[in-house]
Image: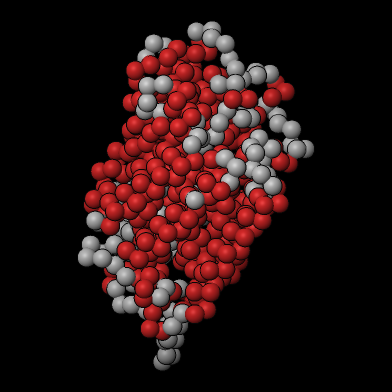
Length: 503
Protein backbone atom coordinates (compact mmCIF):
# COMPACT_ATOMS: atom_id res chain seq x y z
CA UNK A 1 0.00 0.00 0.00
CA UNK A 2 2.06 3.26 -1.32
CA UNK A 3 -0.70 5.23 -1.44
CA UNK A 4 -2.47 8.48 -1.10
CA UNK A 5 -6.23 8.20 -0.83
CA UNK A 6 -8.67 9.43 -3.41
CA UNK A 7 -10.12 11.76 -0.83
CA UNK A 8 -6.97 13.86 -0.98
CA UNK A 9 -7.14 14.45 -4.70
CA UNK A 10 -8.35 17.76 -6.11
CA UNK A 11 -10.40 17.46 -9.26
CA UNK A 12 -9.49 19.98 -11.92
CA UNK A 13 -11.46 21.06 -14.95
CA UNK A 14 -10.52 19.53 -18.26
CA UNK A 15 -9.12 22.85 -19.42
CA UNK A 16 -6.74 23.02 -16.47
CA UNK A 17 -5.44 19.46 -16.54
CA UNK A 18 -2.46 18.02 -18.34
CA UNK A 19 -3.51 15.02 -20.40
CA UNK A 20 -1.98 11.72 -19.34
CA UNK A 21 -0.87 9.03 -21.76
CA UNK A 22 -2.04 5.45 -21.38
CA UNK A 23 1.47 4.39 -20.37
CA UNK A 24 1.87 7.21 -17.82
CA UNK A 25 -1.39 6.36 -16.07
CA UNK A 26 -0.47 2.67 -16.13
CA UNK A 27 2.86 3.37 -14.39
CA UNK A 28 1.12 5.59 -11.82
CA UNK A 29 -1.17 2.67 -11.01
CA UNK A 30 1.78 0.28 -10.69
CA UNK A 31 3.56 2.66 -8.31
CA UNK A 32 0.40 2.90 -6.20
CA UNK A 33 -0.03 -0.84 -5.81
CA UNK A 34 3.26 -2.73 -5.95
CA UNK A 35 4.98 -3.62 -2.67
CA UNK A 36 7.58 -6.35 -2.10
CA UNK A 37 7.02 -7.25 1.52
CA UNK A 38 4.26 -9.80 0.87
CA UNK A 39 6.11 -11.88 -1.73
CA UNK A 40 7.34 -14.56 0.73
CA UNK A 41 3.74 -15.34 1.74
CA UNK A 42 2.92 -16.36 -1.82
CA UNK A 43 6.27 -18.11 -2.38
CA UNK A 44 4.84 -20.72 0.03
CA UNK A 45 2.64 -21.84 -2.86
CA UNK A 46 5.38 -22.22 -5.48
CA UNK A 47 4.03 -22.26 -9.03
CA UNK A 48 0.52 -22.30 -7.55
CA UNK A 49 0.99 -18.64 -6.62
CA UNK A 50 0.62 -17.78 -10.32
CA UNK A 51 -2.96 -19.07 -10.16
CA UNK A 52 -3.72 -16.92 -7.13
CA UNK A 53 -2.19 -13.79 -8.66
CA UNK A 54 -4.24 -14.21 -11.84
CA UNK A 55 -7.39 -15.08 -9.90
CA UNK A 56 -7.11 -11.97 -7.71
CA UNK A 57 -6.35 -9.78 -10.75
CA UNK A 58 -9.49 -10.94 -12.58
CA UNK A 59 -11.79 -10.99 -9.55
CA UNK A 60 -10.47 -7.93 -7.74
CA UNK A 61 -7.77 -5.75 -9.33
CA UNK A 62 -9.50 -5.07 -12.65
CA UNK A 63 -13.04 -4.66 -11.20
CA UNK A 64 -11.76 -2.26 -8.51
CA UNK A 65 -9.99 -0.14 -11.10
CA UNK A 66 -12.89 0.11 -13.55
CA UNK A 67 -15.65 0.61 -10.96
CA UNK A 68 -13.65 3.24 -9.05
CA UNK A 69 -13.02 5.11 -12.31
CA UNK A 70 -16.76 5.40 -12.95
CA UNK A 71 -17.46 6.54 -9.40
CA UNK A 72 -14.62 9.08 -9.49
CA UNK A 73 -15.81 10.61 -12.76
CA UNK A 74 -19.46 10.61 -11.68
CA UNK A 75 -18.85 12.02 -8.19
CA UNK A 76 -15.57 13.96 -8.42
CA UNK A 77 -16.25 16.28 -5.47
CA UNK A 78 -14.19 16.15 -2.28
CA UNK A 79 -14.87 13.16 -0.09
CA UNK A 80 -13.68 10.16 -2.14
CA UNK A 81 -15.10 6.88 -0.84
CA UNK A 82 -17.29 8.78 1.65
CA UNK A 83 -19.09 10.51 -1.20
CA UNK A 84 -19.28 7.43 -3.45
CA UNK A 85 -20.89 5.22 -0.82
CA UNK A 86 -22.86 8.01 0.88
CA UNK A 87 -24.48 8.98 -2.42
CA UNK A 88 -25.96 5.50 -2.61
CA UNK A 89 -26.72 4.56 0.99
CA UNK A 90 -26.63 7.74 3.05
CA UNK A 91 -23.99 9.57 5.09
CA UNK A 92 -23.87 7.00 7.92
CA UNK A 93 -22.72 4.27 5.53
CA UNK A 94 -20.43 6.73 3.75
CA UNK A 95 -18.88 7.54 7.12
CA UNK A 96 -18.39 3.83 7.74
CA UNK A 97 -16.53 3.55 4.42
CA UNK A 98 -14.09 6.41 5.09
CA UNK A 99 -13.63 5.16 8.67
CA UNK A 100 -12.73 1.69 7.40
CA UNK A 101 -10.17 3.19 5.02
CA UNK A 102 -8.54 4.98 7.95
CA UNK A 103 -8.72 2.17 10.49
CA UNK A 104 -7.50 -0.54 8.11
CA UNK A 105 -4.46 1.57 7.30
CA UNK A 106 -3.93 2.02 11.04
CA UNK A 107 -4.00 -1.74 11.61
CA UNK A 108 -1.77 -2.24 8.57
CA UNK A 109 1.05 -0.21 10.11
CA UNK A 110 2.37 -2.93 12.48
CA UNK A 111 2.68 -5.42 9.62
CA UNK A 112 4.66 -3.12 7.37
CA UNK A 113 6.69 -1.84 10.33
CA UNK A 114 7.63 -5.44 11.11
CA UNK A 115 9.08 -5.68 7.62
CA UNK A 116 11.14 -2.53 8.29
CA UNK A 117 12.37 -3.96 11.61
CA UNK A 118 13.44 -7.17 9.88
CA UNK A 119 15.20 -5.18 7.16
CA UNK A 120 17.17 -3.19 9.74
CA UNK A 121 18.11 -6.39 11.58
CA UNK A 122 19.80 -7.64 8.41
CA UNK A 123 22.24 -4.73 8.31
CA UNK A 124 24.57 -6.75 10.56
CA UNK A 125 27.54 -8.74 9.17
CA UNK A 126 26.34 -12.22 10.23
CA UNK A 127 23.15 -13.59 8.65
CA UNK A 128 22.52 -16.18 11.37
CA UNK A 129 22.66 -13.49 14.06
CA UNK A 130 20.53 -11.19 11.88
CA UNK A 131 17.82 -13.83 11.52
CA UNK A 132 17.77 -14.44 15.26
CA UNK A 133 17.50 -10.71 15.97
CA UNK A 134 14.68 -10.25 13.45
CA UNK A 135 12.68 -13.00 15.20
CA UNK A 136 13.12 -11.45 18.64
CA UNK A 137 9.75 -10.07 19.75
CA UNK A 138 11.14 -7.30 21.92
CA UNK A 139 13.48 -6.07 19.18
CA UNK A 140 10.55 -5.99 16.74
CA UNK A 141 8.35 -4.21 19.29
CA UNK A 142 10.90 -1.50 20.03
CA UNK A 143 11.88 -0.94 16.39
CA UNK A 144 8.28 -0.72 15.18
CA UNK A 145 7.40 1.90 17.77
CA UNK A 146 10.51 3.99 17.13
CA UNK A 147 9.92 4.03 13.36
CA UNK A 148 6.20 4.71 13.62
CA UNK A 149 6.40 7.55 16.13
CA UNK A 150 9.35 9.04 14.26
CA UNK A 151 7.28 9.11 11.06
CA UNK A 152 4.36 10.62 13.01
CA UNK A 153 6.57 13.44 14.29
CA UNK A 154 7.66 14.14 10.71
CA UNK A 155 4.01 14.37 9.62
CA UNK A 156 3.16 16.72 12.47
CA UNK A 157 5.65 19.21 11.04
CA UNK A 158 3.51 19.60 7.93
CA UNK A 159 2.86 18.02 4.54
CA UNK A 160 6.08 19.32 2.98
CA UNK A 161 8.25 17.73 5.67
CA UNK A 162 7.81 14.22 4.30
CA UNK A 163 7.40 15.10 0.62
CA UNK A 164 10.93 14.18 -0.48
CA UNK A 165 10.90 11.00 1.59
CA UNK A 166 7.68 9.89 -0.09
CA UNK A 167 8.94 10.89 -3.54
CA UNK A 168 12.18 8.96 -3.48
CA UNK A 169 11.24 6.23 -1.03
CA UNK A 170 9.22 4.22 -3.56
CA UNK A 171 12.07 4.36 -6.08
CA UNK A 172 14.76 3.38 -3.56
CA UNK A 173 12.73 0.91 -1.53
CA UNK A 174 10.43 -0.76 -4.07
CA UNK A 175 11.14 -0.26 -7.77
CA UNK A 176 14.92 -0.74 -7.75
CA UNK A 177 14.89 -3.66 -5.24
CA UNK A 178 12.07 -5.32 -7.21
CA UNK A 179 14.01 -5.08 -10.47
CA UNK A 180 17.14 -6.43 -8.75
CA UNK A 181 15.56 -9.56 -7.28
CA UNK A 182 13.80 -10.37 -10.57
CA UNK A 183 17.09 -9.93 -12.46
CA UNK A 184 18.91 -12.24 -10.04
CA UNK A 185 16.13 -14.81 -10.29
CA UNK A 186 16.40 -14.85 -14.07
CA UNK A 187 20.21 -15.10 -13.97
CA UNK A 188 19.99 -17.90 -11.41
CA UNK A 189 17.90 -20.02 -13.78
CA UNK A 190 19.86 -19.16 -16.93
CA UNK A 191 23.15 -20.14 -15.30
CA UNK A 192 21.79 -23.57 -14.44
CA UNK A 193 21.76 -23.24 -10.65
CA UNK A 194 19.58 -25.62 -8.62
CA UNK A 195 15.97 -24.43 -8.27
CA UNK A 196 14.40 -25.01 -4.87
CA UNK A 197 10.85 -24.62 -6.15
CA UNK A 198 9.19 -27.75 -7.61
CA UNK A 199 8.65 -27.18 -11.34
CA UNK A 200 5.85 -29.34 -12.73
CA UNK A 201 2.41 -28.87 -14.23
CA UNK A 202 0.67 -30.31 -11.18
CA UNK A 203 1.95 -27.37 -9.10
CA UNK A 204 0.24 -24.80 -11.33
CA UNK A 205 -3.26 -25.63 -10.09
CA UNK A 206 -3.34 -25.64 -6.26
CA UNK A 207 -5.43 -28.01 -4.17
CA UNK A 208 -8.57 -25.94 -3.75
CA UNK A 209 -10.22 -28.57 -1.56
CA UNK A 210 -8.03 -27.53 1.39
CA UNK A 211 -9.66 -24.25 2.40
CA UNK A 212 -7.13 -23.43 5.11
CA UNK A 213 -4.41 -23.47 2.44
CA UNK A 214 -6.18 -20.54 0.77
CA UNK A 215 -5.82 -18.15 3.71
CA UNK A 216 -2.38 -16.86 2.83
CA UNK A 217 -3.46 -16.63 -0.80
CA UNK A 218 -6.32 -14.31 0.16
CA UNK A 219 -3.66 -11.79 1.21
CA UNK A 220 -3.07 -11.19 -2.52
CA UNK A 221 -6.23 -9.10 -2.49
CA UNK A 222 -4.44 -6.66 -0.18
CA UNK A 223 -1.47 -6.66 -2.58
CA UNK A 224 -3.79 -5.23 -5.23
CA UNK A 225 -5.59 -2.78 -2.95
CA UNK A 226 -5.11 0.90 -3.68
CA UNK A 227 -5.71 0.94 -7.43
CA UNK A 228 -8.79 3.08 -6.79
CA UNK A 229 -6.66 6.03 -5.68
CA UNK A 230 -5.73 6.96 -9.25
CA UNK A 231 -9.32 6.72 -10.47
CA UNK A 232 -9.55 10.49 -10.00
CA UNK A 233 -7.34 10.87 -13.07
CA UNK A 234 -9.93 9.34 -15.39
CA UNK A 235 -10.79 12.79 -16.77
CA UNK A 236 -7.14 13.54 -17.49
CA UNK A 237 -6.75 10.96 -20.23
CA UNK A 238 -7.90 11.41 -23.84
CA UNK A 239 -10.94 9.34 -24.86
CA UNK A 240 -11.36 7.77 -21.39
CA UNK A 241 -13.95 5.24 -22.53
CA UNK A 242 -11.30 3.64 -24.74
CA UNK A 243 -7.98 4.55 -23.14
CA UNK A 244 -8.74 4.17 -19.43
CA UNK A 245 -9.49 0.43 -19.72
CA UNK A 246 -6.32 0.09 -21.81
CA UNK A 247 -4.29 1.74 -19.03
CA UNK A 248 -5.94 -0.53 -16.46
CA UNK A 249 -5.17 -3.72 -18.35
CA UNK A 250 -1.58 -2.58 -19.01
CA UNK A 251 -0.97 -1.67 -15.37
CA UNK A 252 -2.61 -4.92 -14.27
CA UNK A 253 -0.32 -6.94 -16.56
CA UNK A 254 2.79 -5.14 -15.28
CA UNK A 255 1.71 -5.51 -11.65
CA UNK A 256 0.97 -9.23 -12.01
CA UNK A 257 4.29 -9.77 -13.82
CA UNK A 258 6.24 -8.01 -11.05
CA UNK A 259 4.53 -10.01 -8.33
CA UNK A 260 4.85 -13.35 -10.15
CA UNK A 261 8.50 -12.91 -11.12
CA UNK A 262 9.42 -11.56 -7.67
CA UNK A 263 7.70 -14.49 -5.96
CA UNK A 264 9.41 -16.98 -8.28
CA UNK A 265 12.80 -15.39 -7.57
CA UNK A 266 12.34 -16.06 -3.84
CA UNK A 267 11.14 -19.61 -4.45
CA UNK A 268 14.07 -20.37 -6.77
CA UNK A 269 16.66 -19.93 -4.02
CA UNK A 270 14.81 -20.65 -0.73
CA UNK A 271 13.26 -24.09 -0.09
CA UNK A 272 9.53 -23.97 0.60
CA UNK A 273 10.00 -25.48 4.05
CA UNK A 274 12.35 -22.63 5.05
CA UNK A 275 10.24 -19.69 3.87
CA UNK A 276 9.51 -17.16 6.61
CA UNK A 277 6.91 -14.42 6.07
CA UNK A 278 8.96 -11.68 7.69
CA UNK A 279 12.54 -12.72 6.80
CA UNK A 280 12.62 -14.54 3.47
CA UNK A 281 12.76 -11.50 1.21
CA UNK A 282 15.93 -10.32 2.96
CA UNK A 283 17.36 -13.85 3.03
CA UNK A 284 16.76 -14.18 -0.72
CA UNK A 285 18.67 -10.97 -1.40
CA UNK A 286 21.53 -12.12 0.82
CA UNK A 287 21.70 -15.53 -0.84
CA UNK A 288 21.71 -14.04 -4.33
CA UNK A 289 24.32 -11.44 -3.42
CA UNK A 290 26.58 -14.08 -1.87
CA UNK A 291 26.12 -16.44 -4.85
CA UNK A 292 27.21 -13.74 -7.29
CA UNK A 293 30.06 -12.44 -5.14
CA UNK A 294 28.25 -9.25 -4.12
CA UNK A 295 27.75 -9.96 -0.44
CA UNK A 296 28.89 -6.47 0.51
CA UNK A 297 25.67 -5.07 -1.03
CA UNK A 298 23.38 -6.98 1.33
CA UNK A 299 23.32 -4.35 4.11
CA UNK A 300 22.72 -1.64 1.48
CA UNK A 301 19.65 -3.51 0.24
CA UNK A 302 18.37 -3.92 3.80
CA UNK A 303 18.64 -0.16 4.34
CA UNK A 304 16.95 0.55 0.98
CA UNK A 305 13.97 -1.65 1.85
CA UNK A 306 13.66 0.00 5.27
CA UNK A 307 13.67 3.44 3.59
CA UNK A 308 10.88 2.30 1.29
CA UNK A 309 8.79 1.20 4.25
CA UNK A 310 9.44 4.45 6.11
CA UNK A 311 8.31 6.45 3.06
CA UNK A 312 5.14 4.38 2.70
CA UNK A 313 4.34 4.65 6.40
CA UNK A 314 4.89 8.40 6.35
CA UNK A 315 2.55 8.80 3.38
CA UNK A 316 -0.20 6.64 4.87
CA UNK A 317 0.01 8.28 8.29
CA UNK A 318 -1.04 11.58 6.74
CA UNK A 319 -3.29 10.41 3.87
CA UNK A 320 -6.40 8.58 5.18
CA UNK A 321 -6.33 10.58 8.41
CA UNK A 322 -6.57 13.80 6.39
CA UNK A 323 -9.57 12.40 4.52
CA UNK A 324 -11.19 11.51 7.83
CA UNK A 325 -10.56 15.05 9.09
CA UNK A 326 -12.31 16.56 6.04
CA UNK A 327 -15.38 14.41 6.72
CA UNK A 328 -15.10 15.28 10.41
CA UNK A 329 -15.34 19.00 9.68
CA UNK A 330 -18.73 18.30 8.06
CA UNK A 331 -20.00 17.26 11.49
CA UNK A 332 -19.12 13.58 11.66
CA UNK A 333 -16.37 13.77 14.28
CA UNK A 334 -16.33 15.43 17.72
CA UNK A 335 -14.35 18.69 17.96
CA UNK A 336 -11.60 16.88 19.88
CA UNK A 337 -10.80 14.79 16.78
CA UNK A 338 -10.95 17.84 14.51
CA UNK A 339 -8.14 19.63 16.33
CA UNK A 340 -5.17 20.65 14.21
CA UNK A 341 -1.75 22.02 15.16
CA UNK A 342 -0.13 25.22 13.90
CA UNK A 343 0.84 23.41 10.68
CA UNK A 344 -2.77 22.46 9.97
CA UNK A 345 -2.11 18.77 10.72
CA UNK A 346 -4.78 16.62 12.37
CA UNK A 347 -2.84 16.16 15.61
CA UNK A 348 -5.42 14.37 17.76
CA UNK A 349 -6.41 11.93 15.01
CA UNK A 350 -2.73 11.08 14.59
CA UNK A 351 -2.31 10.62 18.35
CA UNK A 352 -5.34 8.31 18.52
CA UNK A 353 -4.01 6.44 15.50
CA UNK A 354 -0.64 6.10 17.22
CA UNK A 355 -2.26 4.73 20.35
CA UNK A 356 -4.06 2.03 18.35
CA UNK A 357 -0.84 1.14 16.50
CA UNK A 358 1.05 0.87 19.81
CA UNK A 359 -1.55 -1.48 21.28
CA UNK A 360 -1.54 -3.67 18.18
CA UNK A 361 2.24 -3.86 18.10
CA UNK A 362 2.05 -5.29 21.62
CA UNK A 363 0.42 -8.36 20.04
CA UNK A 364 3.91 -9.34 18.98
CA UNK A 365 4.69 -10.10 22.62
CA UNK A 366 1.40 -11.94 23.28
CA UNK A 367 1.03 -14.25 20.28
CA UNK A 368 3.15 -17.41 19.81
CA UNK A 369 5.46 -15.89 17.23
CA UNK A 370 6.19 -12.71 15.30
CA UNK A 371 4.89 -14.53 12.23
CA UNK A 372 1.56 -15.24 13.97
CA UNK A 373 1.09 -11.61 15.01
CA UNK A 374 2.13 -10.45 11.55
CA UNK A 375 -0.43 -12.74 9.92
CA UNK A 376 -3.39 -11.97 12.18
CA UNK A 377 -2.91 -8.22 11.77
CA UNK A 378 -2.57 -8.72 8.01
CA UNK A 379 -5.82 -10.69 7.95
CA UNK A 380 -7.69 -8.08 10.00
CA UNK A 381 -6.40 -5.34 7.69
CA UNK A 382 -7.60 -7.29 4.66
CA UNK A 383 -11.03 -7.93 6.15
CA UNK A 384 -11.72 -4.29 7.04
CA UNK A 385 -10.47 -3.11 3.66
CA UNK A 386 -12.64 -5.73 1.94
CA UNK A 387 -15.73 -4.46 3.78
CA UNK A 388 -14.99 -1.03 2.30
CA UNK A 389 -14.68 -2.56 -1.17
CA UNK A 390 -17.95 -4.46 -0.71
CA UNK A 391 -19.61 -1.11 0.02
CA UNK A 392 -17.94 0.46 -3.04
CA UNK A 393 -19.02 -2.29 -5.46
CA UNK A 394 -22.55 -2.38 -4.05
CA UNK A 395 -22.87 1.42 -4.26
CA UNK A 396 -21.71 1.52 -7.88
CA UNK A 397 -24.22 -1.16 -8.96
CA UNK A 398 -27.04 0.42 -6.95
CA UNK A 399 -26.44 3.92 -8.38
CA UNK A 400 -26.68 2.59 -11.93
CA UNK A 401 -30.30 1.64 -11.17
CA UNK A 402 -31.33 4.36 -8.72
CA UNK A 403 -29.63 7.29 -10.47
CA UNK A 404 -29.27 6.30 -14.14
CA UNK A 405 -29.24 9.93 -15.28
CA UNK A 406 -26.23 11.07 -13.27
CA UNK A 407 -23.60 12.40 -15.70
CA UNK A 408 -20.95 9.70 -16.09
CA UNK A 409 -17.94 10.95 -18.12
CA UNK A 410 -16.53 7.42 -17.83
CA UNK A 411 -18.67 4.29 -17.68
CA UNK A 412 -17.69 0.72 -17.00
CA UNK A 413 -17.75 -1.00 -20.42
CA UNK A 414 -20.98 -2.78 -21.30
CA UNK A 415 -23.50 -0.33 -19.89
CA UNK A 416 -25.63 -1.35 -16.93
CA UNK A 417 -25.13 -5.04 -17.70
CA UNK A 418 -21.37 -4.46 -17.77
CA UNK A 419 -21.52 -2.79 -14.36
CA UNK A 420 -23.57 -5.64 -12.92
CA UNK A 421 -21.15 -8.23 -14.30
CA UNK A 422 -17.86 -6.47 -13.52
CA UNK A 423 -19.04 -5.00 -10.22
CA UNK A 424 -20.63 -8.34 -9.33
CA UNK A 425 -17.37 -10.18 -10.02
CA UNK A 426 -15.49 -7.77 -7.77
CA UNK A 427 -18.16 -8.06 -5.08
CA UNK A 428 -18.08 -11.88 -5.20
CA UNK A 429 -14.28 -11.91 -5.06
CA UNK A 430 -14.21 -9.55 -2.08
CA UNK A 431 -16.81 -11.60 -0.20
CA UNK A 432 -14.93 -14.84 -0.91
CA UNK A 433 -11.64 -13.40 0.33
CA UNK A 434 -13.40 -12.00 3.41
CA UNK A 435 -14.80 -15.41 4.34
CA UNK A 436 -11.48 -17.19 3.79
CA UNK A 437 -9.72 -14.73 6.05
CA UNK A 438 -11.37 -16.28 9.10
CA UNK A 439 -9.63 -19.62 8.52
CA UNK A 440 -6.32 -20.15 10.36
CA UNK A 441 -3.44 -20.66 7.90
CA UNK A 442 -2.04 -24.20 7.85
CA UNK A 443 1.49 -22.94 7.25
CA UNK A 444 1.88 -20.85 10.43
CA UNK A 445 1.58 -21.70 14.13
CA UNK A 446 -1.06 -19.29 15.41
CA UNK A 447 -1.91 -20.99 18.67
CA UNK A 448 -5.55 -21.86 19.31
CA UNK A 449 -7.76 -21.73 16.18
CA UNK A 450 -10.60 -20.60 18.41
CA UNK A 451 -8.52 -17.67 19.64
CA UNK A 452 -7.57 -16.84 16.03
CA UNK A 453 -11.19 -16.69 14.85
CA UNK A 454 -12.25 -14.94 18.04
CA UNK A 455 -9.67 -12.17 17.67
CA UNK A 456 -10.63 -11.57 14.05
CA UNK A 457 -14.36 -11.56 14.83
CA UNK A 458 -13.88 -9.21 17.77
CA UNK A 459 -11.72 -6.89 15.68
CA UNK A 460 -14.34 -6.75 12.93
CA UNK A 461 -17.21 -6.09 15.35
CA UNK A 462 -15.39 -3.39 17.31
CA UNK A 463 -13.97 -1.46 14.36
CA UNK A 464 -17.22 -1.57 12.38
CA UNK A 465 -19.34 -0.56 15.39
CA UNK A 466 -17.26 2.49 16.35
CA UNK A 467 -18.29 4.74 13.39
CA UNK A 468 -21.98 3.95 13.94
CA UNK A 469 -21.63 4.91 17.60
CA UNK A 470 -19.88 8.16 16.67
CA UNK A 471 -22.55 8.91 14.04
CA UNK A 472 -25.37 8.27 16.53
CA UNK A 473 -23.78 10.64 19.08
CA UNK A 474 -23.05 13.47 16.61
CA UNK A 475 -24.28 16.98 17.40
CA UNK A 476 -24.94 20.04 15.21
CA UNK A 477 -22.12 21.83 17.05
CA UNK A 478 -19.61 19.35 15.60
CA UNK A 479 -19.85 20.99 12.18
CA UNK A 480 -16.92 23.31 11.62
CA UNK A 481 -16.71 25.97 8.90
CA UNK A 482 -13.38 25.20 7.22
CA UNK A 483 -13.45 26.55 3.67
CA UNK A 484 -10.78 24.26 2.24
CA UNK A 485 -12.43 21.19 3.78
CA UNK A 486 -16.07 22.04 2.99
CA UNK A 487 -17.92 19.05 1.54
CA UNK A 488 -20.56 19.63 -1.09
CA UNK A 489 -23.99 18.10 -0.34
CA UNK A 490 -24.97 14.80 -1.91
CA UNK A 491 -27.06 15.14 -5.07
CA UNK A 492 -30.17 14.01 -3.18
CA UNK A 493 -29.58 16.75 -0.57
CA UNK A 494 -29.59 19.59 -3.07
CA UNK A 495 -32.80 21.60 -3.42
CA UNK A 496 -34.80 20.85 -6.54
CA UNK A 497 -34.47 23.44 -9.28
CA UNK A 498 -37.64 25.56 -9.59
CA UNK A 499 -39.83 24.79 -12.58
CA UNK A 500 -39.95 27.49 -15.23
CA UNK A 501 -43.31 29.29 -15.33
CA UNK A 502 -45.35 29.03 -18.49
CA UNK A 503 -46.37 32.08 -20.46
